[in-house]
Amino acid sequence: MSKLQLYISKSGREQVRLADINADSVVSGAIKDMRATVANVDYPASDKSVFYIVDNIQAGYCIHIIRTIPPTKPNYLDATIFVGSETDIMAEDLADTIAVVTEKMLASAVTDADMKELEELFDVDYDNKDKVKRIKPSRGSETAYVACSGRRSFESLISEGLYRPEWSAYKCVVIIGDDFGMMPGTAVDLYEVESEAEKPRRKSKDVVEDKAAAEEATLRYGFVLPMTTPDGHTTLEFEVESSKPITRSPISGYEIADKAKEGEVNRLRRGNDDGIYGKLGRLIWIIAGFVVGVVVMMIASLFDGEDSHAEKASSSASHEKVASTEGVESSEATAYLDNNNIWQREQMERIEGLQGLFDAMNQFRFDELGGKWSKELSGSKNFARVARAAQKARSKKVDPRRDKDHNPCYNREGDMRINWVGYIYWIDP
Image (cartoon, rainbow, N blue to C red; front, top):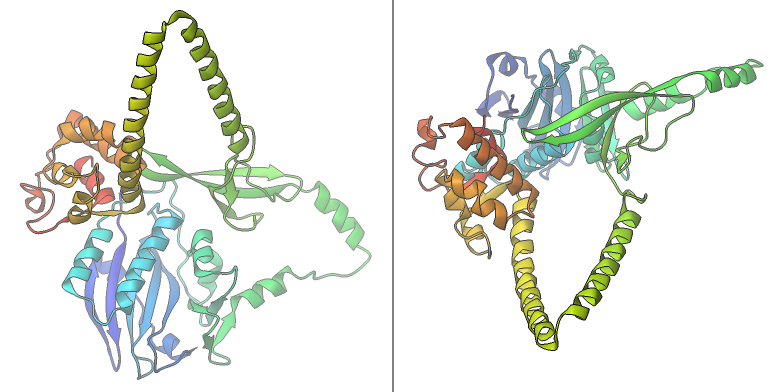
């Protein structure tokens, strides 16, 4: 298991480290001073602006979240997220982490409450990769940049992967919005370089022969499939060989995060499956279930008297009313649990179906979590993982009070927020 690291610095006449989370001495010493690079970004000095810089070191890669400090250029805050080469983090989780840190950096000040929230965010343990690839450190003398606009968004860059071996040919890569720019002559436009590389280099009588050879050639595509196990998120890497370019996901129910690139690893994400096992299949099963239900009711009515039939109808109507009410409550409770990584006691106590759950988790009442709460919140995928972790902790006889910070409760006194991901890794390490 491994965790992300965070280093917050302030740069003006000199660079000063303000705070860090999960710091490592080797990584801390390798983080670069970006003042010269920031000075070459063309941004409005009078406003607070945000852009990103990526550079690779021996142990992993760094994402510098640069928040400028007006009105003096190039004064700025640098919140550097370090991702170890062994850390198996989903693109969605990394994007969420970057978004939260960016939001904190844009505030007028980083408060103690903000730091506490960041500590919880960076307390999540991620699985280690089965195969750890060697990171190529950034060793170039030139700076490169990527301008994001339209479909080429920062989120799409994250989904494609922010560690790219080809970026190591540069000192660092600056990621800016389309309303920013780079000072002339200070950086290389990566997309111009890629466009030039994709242009045909030969125009001769050999084109026809090359085309025939290309049709016979074997194309190789790597894919990364996100998976969820009882122990958390992981990925499955596999390779597909094809004589023709691949344009669609080879896995039903998934889509390629971006245009498939031959010879590279392409990320898959869950998409729409319109096949027989997708929407159409579900519709067929719904109709079949309805027909079967009608037939069964007709047969049952032949053997029941009027009184029995009336009694069943009344009971059915009553049951449907209760089920309808429970469905509304459950949907609100499920939506809260599945749409939030951090669960807050005050909010949970206001939601029907969640009253008392925070205290049960905080007080390590594993019997309740794996029993009563598991049944009542069976529709929540996030709580299903909490319930499984509680059952495992009970069977393994894990002592959740093994650390003073989690004794006698998971949270310290006065802390009314639980990051459910960090919680399951603590009770079921």
